[in-house]
Image (cartoon, rainbow, N blue to C red; front, side, top):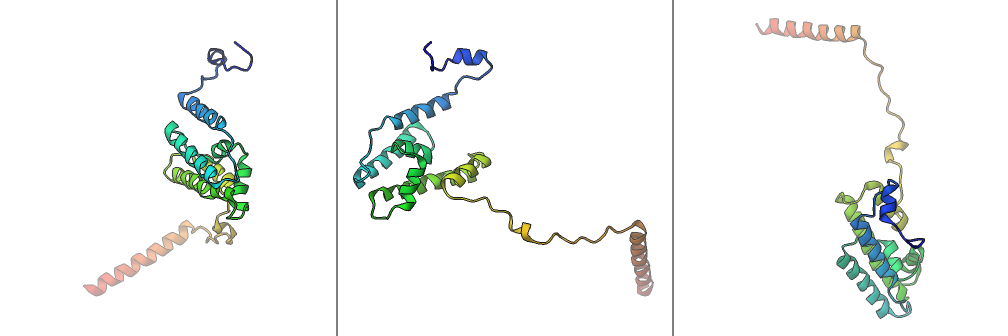
Length: 175
């Protein structure tokens, strides 16, 4: 077998599981995206067509859209895609990516809320791609709760004996 080619039998013999069908499908999808011809980023129609083609391929291949794979379809890094979406003027054709970028982020959030994405992975994706931030809980700023010292056995006995005496006197009055 040529060097650099993944050998499933050899990997299984070393205790590594072979690539799953799902992983193979995702790899095929990414290879399709990488094989797309370059896009003229000065042409709004070309950018819109690539966005449509990207989502069509995601649906066709049964693969969730991600910022990284959308960037791959444009042959750019995900940070470049972010720059196009949020740092270019609205009249720049590359700004058309903004809506697609937001669709991907919304889809990721929906999948997270529905329990289809591991919460740790979902938050990682949203923090890296959608500017979500990990914020400490608002209660952490409050002073710690001041608890009373525990009540002793003797205090409890005295309290409940006094309450029992009050009940006995109330019963005598009602007779």
